[in-house]
Figure 1 (cartoon, helix red, strand yellow):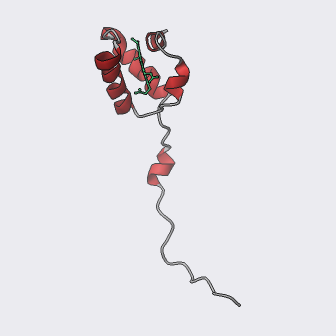
Figure 2 (cartoon, rainbow, N blue to C red; figure 1 turned 120 degrees about the horizontal axis):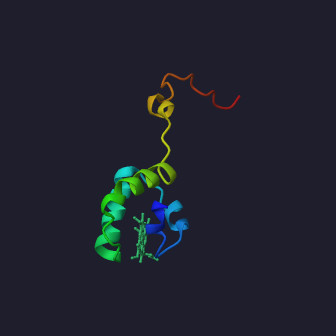
Figure 3 (cartoon, rainbow, N blue to C red; figure 1 turned 90 degrees about the vertical axis):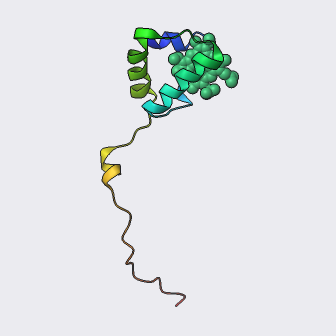
Length: 81
Ligand code: HEC
């Protein structure tokens, strides 16, 4: 499995604790290559990226992107009474 390459050095828990976007995973892979000694993934990079983004991505639901803020015009809250 593709992600085995990422669990050679640490557990998958580390991945689930660091959920991020696809861009974030690209940066993480680059850092693993540069600083932690990950062998360049080559052809595996894309499937691994797909896997990370799908499994450990940040879920932004399309409905949330479209959702507007609450209307500003709200009746003032009566104070005391
Ligand atoms: C050669 C060993 C090695 C491999 C292979 C490796 N990592 Fe890491 N990774 C590390 C080390 C070392 C740390 C730092 C752990 C710590 O701080 O306790 C780390 C930390 C992390 C973290 C924690 C956050 C951070 O940025 O420090 C994430 C997320 C992560 N790795 C993702 C990945 C992914 C995704 C892959 C596969 C593409 C991968 N790693 C492959 C060695 C590796």
